Image 1 (tube, rainbow, N blue to C red):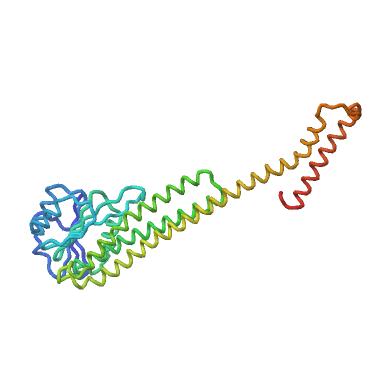
Image 2: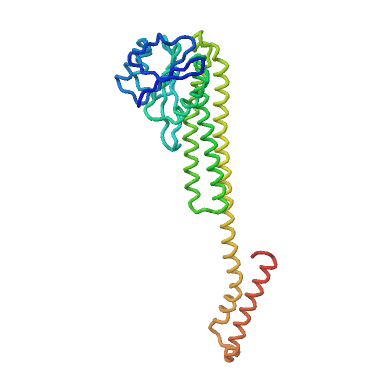
Length: 318
């Protein structure tokens, strides 16, 4: 089903509406209509335009496929286009168009957006949605949208914590995972950051019509929450940098351990190598005529190696 129309009344009741043959004259001060369109057809868009009796500019805005973030005032409607996060944060953002007028709101998107469905279910719990002005509904809707960024930030922080454990265990493929996580955080921040300009535009005194001035404080609170969401992603990025520092420290420590072992092995074998080199020189000496001295030389080599090893253990090099 690509079109869903929900009529909420002031007494907390909600009813699905079939827009064919339905007129916006049925909307009074105690009712609020929300129409959600998912990849609508031209006929469905025509039904919406005729039911709401939209003007040319609002109808053109609804029919157009808008993907860029924007906030626009039409003759009888306000249009806001935002980007939403998909379930998989690596995927591209989902464009969501919001058109609100007197007593009605229309949302349009090309693909399913989880938080939109969740918000629809949430408001159908005997809440007096019909008492809300469209701008108040918009603020509540955008507030739920901001919650998705907070949830994404918490999700990324949990994944960074898992990377911390992997860094302490010196996982071999950790560097690639760190780079991938950095790209995910940067991608989500790029989705969020431009919306600060959109919310700032909504908060301008000359943007909203006079009848929607009461929503100014709510929009300012929404802008503050959006800034906190951006700070949450900044914190996740700083946590990731800390994880990278742990990884580099562990890598350096592992390298030092290897170099220490190699150095100690070299020190242990060096006396034996020197003795073997001296004894292997091409000169005649009486000691070479006694074959038993071979075992004496080998014993000296072993003794020196054992003494070096004991000294290293005493200095806690091993």
